[in-house]
Image 1 (tube, rainbow, N blue to C red):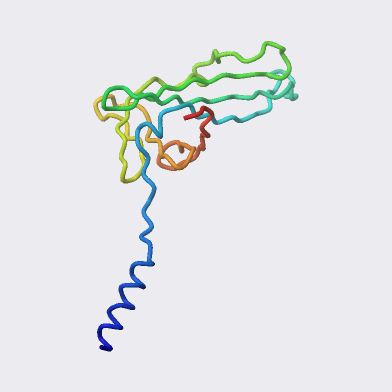
Image 2 (spheres, one colour):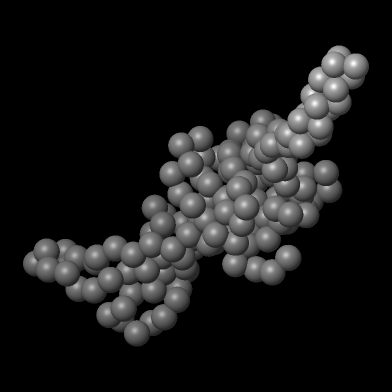
Length: 146
């Protein structure tokens, strides 16, 4: 009788325990637009004086492409001193990265660049955010509705 009661208590305890699993995202959960925005002072080359502030909006767009995902990137800049508004950057250093394809590693919630292309960086997925590269240095936030 004592063994049955012990066994019953053990079953009750085990049934109340929850296994915490890492949330996995489907391709449909990941597709969308993500933005990272930052600002920097713009210096006058001749005098070294601050002319104003530049705001850069770095956008990653993820779309379904067959059995893979397509990652594209756009960057827009806005200088608060020139009244031009949002423009695509001219300098090569500020250009967006080329479009590339990724495979979705659902175990690690990681978007792995296609090895055949030899370009692109891995992206990590968490909630409504993407993280750039292995160091997860930049955090992009989702801006569109699902």
